[in-house]
Amino acid sequence: MKLRSIVVFFVSLLIFGGAYFVIDRFVDLSSQTLVEINPEDLGEGNIIDEFGDDLLFLLIGVDENEDAIGDAKNKHVRTDTMMLVNMNFETGDIKIISIPRDTMVKYKGESMKINGAHSHDGPTGALNAVRKLTGLDVDYYMSVNYKAVTDIVDTIGGVEVDSPVRIRPRGTEIVIPEGKSTLDGEKALHFVRAREVLPTGSDLARVENQQYFMKQLVDTVLQPSNILKIGKIFDVYKENVTTNIDLSKFKISDMATIASSFGKEKMETKTLPIAIPEGKSYVLPKKKEIATLMANWFPDYILDKNQLDKYEDGNYSDDSDDSVSYNKNKSNNNKKSYNSNN
Image 1 (cartoon, rainbow, N blue to C red):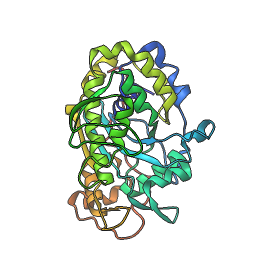
Image 2 (image 1 turned 90 degrees about the vertical axis):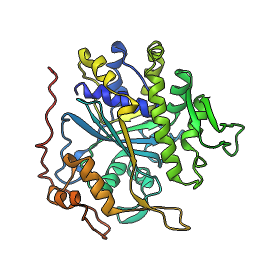
Image 3 (image 1 turned 90 degrees about the horizontal axis):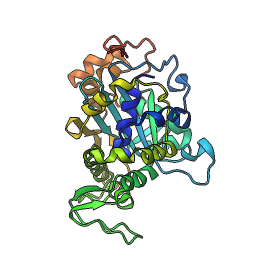
């Protein structure tokens, strides 16, 4: 794995934590966090491609099953957060699409909310559900235990937010006031999970809040004072992250340049287009709008290239349960291979 492994690590921690890089502690991260998946489990003939100048991966936030042992700790649990993250390593641009956890999909013939796919088959299930929903060739994942939020925020001394409402999570003594305040780790976790942030009280409120918090977090972790805290941040990462992105190899000389390219001003966020049925606990995907969004944002990752023109024109319509079929002759001609000598 090349330098972009570092950037994946960097951005994933920005979203659920945040960090700079320390060389002597980085090399052992791969053995701690690497959990590979079978490419064919994501589609017949599938190949997990090498990165080009950008990378698309699924970021998964989970609550660890404390009663389980080893890899099973984060497998048979529902995902609390799902985000498609695309990073451009040349420009530093980051595109993030949040997928509401209540989005209704079909997985293995069963109708369920998309967060349930992970409880069946772990990250492989989550990836399969997202691939079918979006029509994208997303092969990589990063799964982060939500405990990382509290630990990282406490490590960096808190994160300032401007809450639109007063938040008082049920069953706790915690109060997050309306307006500006600095959140410690416990309050930060409640802030990103609260539904009270918007008048709707829906999962969309949570999604919007998470996207806002993510950007505030970026500002905080990029402060020079946090360099001194990198050791603790690495420990949090090793304890709370699993991924099929190999972090064992990287190019040291470019780390500072790449890290300095990223910032909240280069982060663009959207939420997956959905419809909200009245009186229901789930939301429905707007397939036509989803197809158009994916074609405009991620044209190099469309599974069925033959459908690309229809997607880009915004004329795609599919009322069936199945999304695009897997095309094992997919082209990656638009992706330049990474040159570690650049």
